[in-house]
Length: 68
Image (cartoon, rainbow, N blue to C red):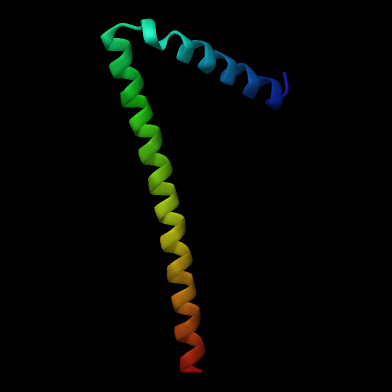
């Protein structure tokens, strides 16, 4: 099984679980929202890290250029 087929399989399983979400128990809904929150926080932190890194690199380059 190559990476593409494995990714499609995982996405298909996620899609099936999302379709059953309206009939889920409160515990399953709570677990879904906790996992979703962790994923969103991870993406937000990664985006903020990249933005901070880019801003800091640009500032260091400008400061070094002005000192020389």
